Amino acid sequence: IRYGQKGDSVYARIGTLDNGTLGNGFMMFHYNNAANYDQRKIGAQFDLDLGDYGFETLYSNFGRPEILGLRGYYRPLADSGIPIAETVEVGLAYVTDFDPNPSDSVDATLAGINLDIGFYPVKNDIFRWKFYFDYGKYFDYGSGAAFGSSFILPNLIGVLEFGVKYERRLLGDQFVPSLFDMSYELNKVAVGGTHVLEAAKGFNGNFGEIAISILGSFFIHGNYSKSDGSLHDGRFYSELSIPGLTPPIDFSARYYKSGLDGLSDLFSFDTRSVAEVEFGYEIAPYTYLSTTYRKNWVEVVDETSGITTYEGQETIIPQVKFRYTF
Image (cartoon, rainbow, N blue to C red; front, top):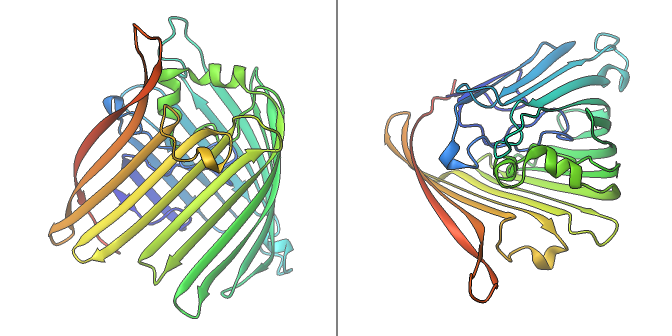
């Protein structure tokens, strides 16, 4: 159940969360609480923007305590009437996982905070240009910082919305940017959330993102991050969404991969890869019957030869959705 869109003055969602993001996404970015379908959850998001201040919230699982994300923000000069200054926004986020290592016998908690500040040199109906800075710290682990800029053309000749984003990252040991992402629920089962942080090495690197919307009915979104060195730490995410492909049919597809050594490694499918395709059909007014096909890969070691291969795991997820535009 969803009301509004992320970024609206009021946004609420209950059920499957497939795009959980707080602030600029430095700690939580495209989080999905249903990545591990065998342990799927019912969660909630609620965001409220009151002009001078607002907040974003996410809770991943009503079944038992797991991930909680909170971000509050304040625009101290919103009523000043001074261009640029009135767009300044300061935010503070807190993210925690009460059960980051479900395979361990010893209880652990993973928690961190994130401070962000941003402003718009230009913000109008023609284009929006933003600068921002983030600093994140996981308690008992490492910290990192990022600064970047985004540029959006929200309405190009009434047909196209286009946005790009670049971010420079300066990361210490035991810190992972956007740790809570599309694959986090898979990683916490396979490795453990705190163990991912323990193994992380510090580096400087880059993050880039592009988003395109055509006539409000065709959406393409992708991002890629990589360190300056040769570490196997690249991450790629892409999404294609066509809500009105051929009415009454909807279509969307997503692909994520982490641990990349470069773009040449992008489509070598293994434990670091997750792919999804979703089809929906309107069976009655405001009612859609949809099916999601998800595939991820697990490591298989031959007992005789010792050779490691990767075997795909396929999941079919039927759903009934109710959609009404207010």
